[in-house]
Length: 283
Image 1 (cartoon, rainbow, N blue to C red):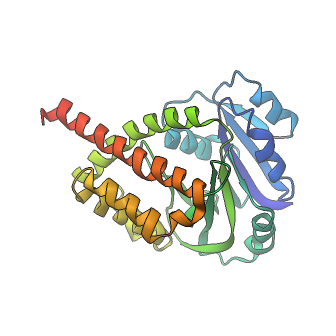
Image 2 (cartoon, helix red, strand yellow; image 1 turned 180 degrees about the vertical axis):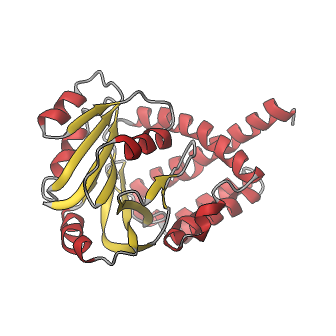
């Protein structure tokens, strides 16, 4: 048994939850909690049948609120905690790395950073955005999910982080129409965050924690992006990903990924920022 408690948030994830839980079998975690927002597709019953402890909690509309509620209220027993989405899974070599290395880490190491792979449009969109480094495993009580509407990350309260070699995978199996609708909602939420970030730095406290260097670097890059002229920055970002970072080398998968997620999505984020400013300030 690995001394780790896994927390998975879900609502209507029958398409993904079995794969997610099966991937954890080799890890042999101390606990697996599925925080279910009253699913109607039977995914809660499926998770329970596969051995997870299902806890029901009403979705507030914000991922960070739901996850922080789980971290504060679930009876977590593991020395380590893993945050995982239902459409994600750790690769077998990453599971083996966790089993081998976690128990040997120094006490001042409170977080583990892993690379995320994105599988979409029939394959791995490797070039242009990979690797995305995210904190997904942390000592119990030592991390919190940042309070944002979109693109929320785990951040450490204290200690330092270490990077592991092997990856976890984000692989949603729903169709492209669902993906577009989901990202229209994401764009509205990211626009709210972008405007708030330009007003003040609400996460300055965590900038002083050594283990949050990756988080700080990502936030500063995003801040620089939003200081560029609207819409021009979208085209510049797409060209950087697709041409300079080599996204075009992934063929049709790379073309679709960078056009839709790197160009189309960021364009509608800027459109939403303009709309919010116009509605709020008449500009």
